[in-house]
Amino acid sequence: MKTLIIGEVINKNLSSGTLEILGKAKSMELDVQLITVGSEDSPAIGLNEVKQTYLKRASSSFNFSKIASKISEIIKNEDIKLILGSSTYMCRDLISFISVDLNSSPVSNVVDFNLEDGKISTINSINGGESLYKAKINSDHSLLLIRPKAFDPVEIEVNSDYETIEVENTDLDVFDIYIEEKTGPQLEDSKVVISAGRGMVEKENLEMIETLANKLNAAIGGTRAIVDAGWMPYSQQVGQTGKTVKPDIYIACGISGATQHQVGMKDSKFVIAINKDEEAPIFQLADLGIVGDTLSVIPKLNENI
Image 1 (cartoon, rainbow, N blue to C red):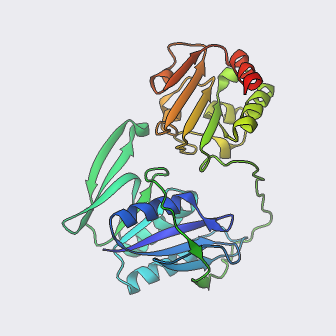
Image 2 (cartoon, rainbow, N blue to C red):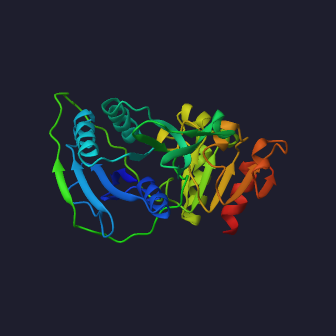
Image 3 (cartoon, rainbow, N blue to C red):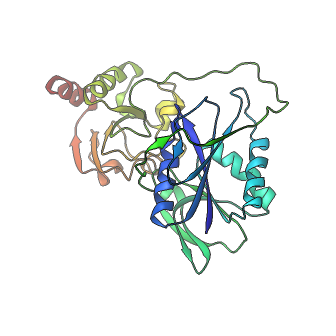
């Protein structure tokens, strides 16, 4: 089946979500090409085995309608039947536009998909990740939004051999752009993630989390409660309405473990939970649980690492 993956560029490289979908497509031996969207000059995104087209947009452009129109044109001209994108802000916008052009409904929260009798069937996450359902797509085109960390990323070598198409700006006027500065390991890709919850009591106590993260070369996350309280930016939120992570080690500090948070970290390979409430739901997921006050336990860890 002819397949198109909509990719993203982050720091001049293919995003982890793009690599995850490539890994799944490769395992299914699909006839794949990649259209990657970004605003950076000359990113390292060329692939030896997959046709790559780079749609370069202006950094001040936040309307994806013209990019979507270009992608729809390619889909129709090349008779592509399966369109895949990671469930990010950009891909959700693009696939929404494309679905109108193709008169096909997109399927979201996909955690797996297969080809059966020439039709795509999907497994989708619902009810905050507590339930799964299976769907079979009967329309001419299948548009899937893949949940981050659903698949393992493929390891590939990149080059500079790809076609670049510049997409003109829309008429939307942008007066100011704020880009959040990111330093250190990032949530999506870090092998160790330390997340904080309301059990940290006060924002100032996050300093001990930062100390531990520096010692372990870990990324820092948080629950929706402390993000809403202004303790850390939304970009660090882990959970149903935040980011999905799948590190080798996930350390939950003062997190009770509500379902909405579990959705974003339940697939971590090894979970360590620190909470003074021995009945906290987070212990149901934990491989190692420490019943104790995080404000006492974490300083001890910092002293001994």
